[in-house]
Length: 249
Image (tube, rainbow, N blue to C red; front, side, top):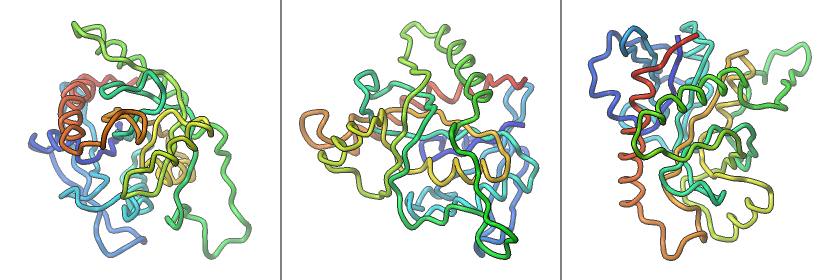
């Protein structure tokens, strides 16, 4: 069964009545992690709210270890993260979608490994390809099928580099120029350490990213949070049918 980790943009999924809810106590904090199960057609999907039930936990305070550990404890081995991002690549205008194949981590101070204490030897994961290629291919195939049914097709990029910044503030124009020079195509705040933690536990992990604004300095004027909110609403109206029609192999 596919597990979804989503942000506040996926609040509409929570308007449905879940089949049931699991609450998992983890070694990484006193708060139990809630995982809801929904029926979509013939499929069931698990959903974990990345920023907590009220969407109030900022990116740098998300308990990524507890979230990933809880999904693994419940038996989930395939995880799709759904993230909103700022567009840097010329084709990643607001509303465009990317399924990234690489990332660069600019965060600091986030607990980023399960392997810290009581070790007989240091543990190093191979992170050459941070996103699972099979899950990425399946996601792209299903996005293409969904896009084909729309009169106005959305731009979907099948690869790119996700630059993960610390947040919760947005970036400066100079920082975005640096990310451009580094080769980043999109910028967000939540892919790390989520992707690395999933790899440590042997879970297939991929991202669907939705551009909701041009990154700082790439468009005239200030970034409007109201406009971002509108793009999230419109974008998730496209993404939700993808989940409703998800076809597991």
